[in-house]
Length: 173
Length: 275
Image (cartoon, one colour):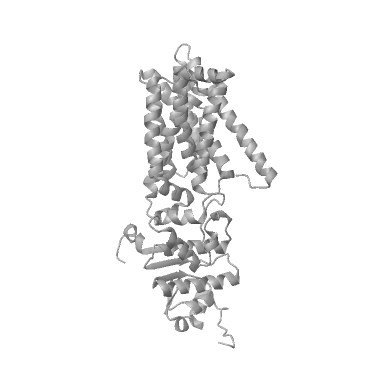
C-alpha cells in the first residue's frame, strides 16, 4: 500500500494466532466489536455475525466462548472494517478438524463476498493446497512461489521439511 | 435517627468529608476497573506509599503537603513507566524499590520535626477531620477532570486493558496512552490519601471492581456496579465512623471488605465463578 504502518491500519485487518486476554474480563461479544469499530452500527455487527452463524452470541461474554467461536469473532472484528487486505496468522490453531474446515470455508466465502485479499500464514499443506490462489514457501528464505499445484512439488517439500518428506496424492484426487 | 443524620450533615468537616468521599467514590472505583483488569493493583499501593515523600517535602519546604504529594506521585508514576521500558527489572520489583524508598524518605524527613507522630498517623491512616476547604477544592477539581478524561478515553483504555497489540491495530496510541494512564492513576491515588490514608487508599481502587467483576454481565455494568459499590462503601463507612467513633478510612475499607466476603460467599453458594 506504500504507506506507513500507522496510516495503513485502516486498510488492513489482522487475525492473530492467539488472542491472549484475561478470560474473566466481563466484556460481551457486542461490546468487544463496538469497542473495536465504534463506527459500525449494531445492525451491521448483527448482520456480519449472521454470516458466521454466531447470531446467538451477541450478549455472551468473550471469555466464555470456545476457541473456534473466539476465532470467528476475531474474523468478524477484522471484517467489520471492510479491509482491503486481511492477514491471518495460523488462525485455526487449536481448532478440531471439523471446526477448522468450516472456518476456512468461511474465510473463502468472506474473500469472495467482500473482495478482500487474504494473506494467510499456515503450516498445513492441505489447507494451502485447497484454499489458496498463490503460495510463497518460506524457510528463512523464499523457497518457492506460484500456484499451489505448481509450487508445492516434491523438491520444495524436501527443502522445506527435510529429506524424509514426500508427496502422496489421495486416489480420489 | 433522621434528626441525628441531619445534625451530622450540618457539620462542616463532615460535609467536606462526604463531598470529597463522593468524588473519590467515583474516580477510584472507575479507574480501578482498568487497574484490576491490567493486574496493576500493586502499582496503586506503591504510589500511595511513595506519597509520604511528597508530604514530607511539602512540610519541610513550607508548601502544601497535599499539592507536593500530587507532584511527587505523578513523578513516581512517570518514573516507573520509563524504568519499566528502559531496564530489564520486573515491574513489581521496580515498584517495590521506588515506593518503599519514597516511604522511607518521607518518614526520615518527617521525623526531623518535633511532634511528628500525629501528622504521620493522619497521613498513614487517613482522617475525616483533615480535609480543609482548600483540599476539598483540589479533590473536586481533579476529580471532575479525571472523570471527564475517563469517559472520553474509556474506549481506548478498555482496548488497551484487553490486549495491547490489537489495541494499536485499532488506532490506539498505546505508548502515550499507557504513560497518561500511569500519571492519571498516580494522581487519583494521591487524591484519596487524605481521607483514606496511605495504607488503605488502594483498597478502594481494588475492592469495588473485584466485587463488580463477580456480578457484572458486561463491561458497561462492570463500571456501573464498581462505582455504585464505591459510593456505598464511602457514605456508609463515613456515617459508621462518625457514629461509632472509628477511624474513617479503616471503616470505609472494612465495609468494602465485608461486602466483598458476602458476595464471594454468595458466589460459592450459587456455584458461580469467583473473580
